[in-house]
Length: 414
Image 1 (cartoon, helix red, strand yellow):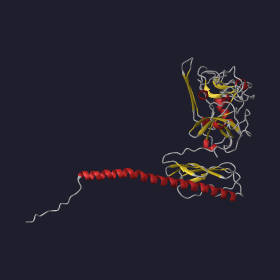
Image 2 (image 1 turned 180 degrees about the vertical axis):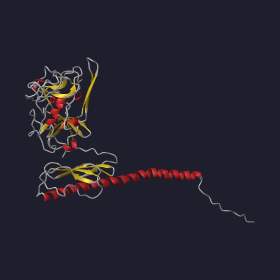
Image 3 (image 1 turned 45 degrees about the vertical axis):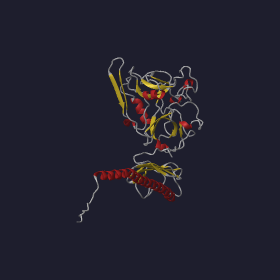
Image 4 (image 1 turned 90 degrees about the vertical axis):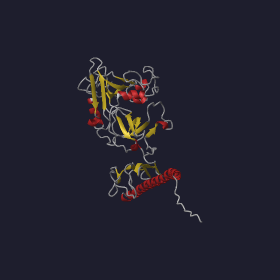
């Protein structure tokens, strides 16, 4: 008899299935990141192509502009602000025909933010922080570069004439010790697009328009905080209506508003300043807040706390800024914080670089906690002091106002 063999239909065992799943998972772990990288590179390349297209459109804009204006083109910076609607001209180009020349005409993805600038009489196009498809991109005049998704490309600014960084002081022939200074900036506060330099800037007491010299001492969020190298007013009271410092520098702020009324609206609005303390004699709490929007939002006063932070000393301590230089023994050029009290009466006896008549110092925004009739001021001895009463306006030894402004570094670039 023949034995009947039945053929069995065999399937995969559980172990075999698990092995297959593991192999597939390993392949996925290897392949998926590679695929994502390929897609990400493609998106990045597309973003860079879009930036290059925007730059080309800016070059075409220059050609069209010159054809429409008999070959003329502004010698300052022509800026376009970009949104999801496109890139629109932000300048008012007085004296030029800008009909149909207020937008960049380009194809492709529109950036949701960023700026495009045309400088050097139309010869150079740059772009910064163009946000396209999740990438932040720049154009340096030759090529586009984009950061990975969510990453901001750090832009190395090409500063215009009149901006001298601390690391370039020696090369530019600037001698002396400028402790705490990040850059010297020559700037016209009434028009940030004007080209300024050392030769056309004026540091005369009372000068509050035209090209002026500024010291940048803080760099935050792409903005320079800067103080002028001279007082922009004559001598004024801190608060002329009273000898009480608890209401803040009302008179000084009103004079600051008058002196800066026609300054450029591109200046960054100062944040409010609050002073609060406990009276040393009566033990009651005192405070006031300066809302600079009530005084034009163009400039502010430096605070005693800021001065203290710059020079590294307690602002309740009267004495020379430079711990290596006693105020009595200082000679010309020895005080490394001389830039804080330049252009005050007889200041060269205490280490400043240049003296001029007019004011013995300048007011800060800060009251003196220990004396209700006094406020802090920077004086020609190279000190933070509180010698004067808040309503002091002596013509020979009074205090003027030395403004602090905040400027976007992008407005100082080419």
